[in-house]
Image (cartoon, rainbow, N blue to C red):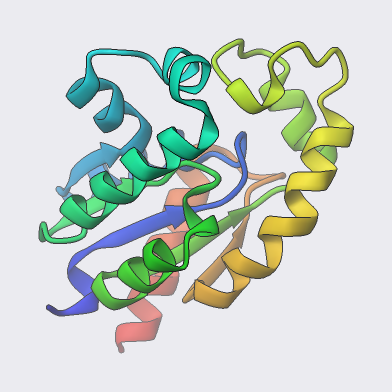
Length: 175
């Protein structure tokens, strides 16, 4: 499979994977898929409920299955869950089957963005998300970087400008 046919977005929660992914899909006339939404669609349950019933381990098993299935498609923009890269199997699958883009944001911006959501199980019951986000960043940042073909910082630009930047960089890489 030609890696250029799929674009996989990785990064911490709040980095902009879903918003930027949707914009990229519109601009490139590709299908957009969010792996968390796909898990919810397949199970008929939301992510917090899956975490409550099956724990993170059960959720991660479901996530690995969904990512393996989605990696077999062609011509998609996939926004992965922030922890998808924890499984080596997922990292290998993403690297083999598409262009991986790490959407990176500062801890300040991530805190600001995630404070508006109650749909993030790893931040449940946390008044201040910063310590948890710092811990997640410490573990995950090297894994995101390990598989990234591109690293894009999402702090200072609009979703549209970030999508244009990604498209320009992808076109430059192909030239």
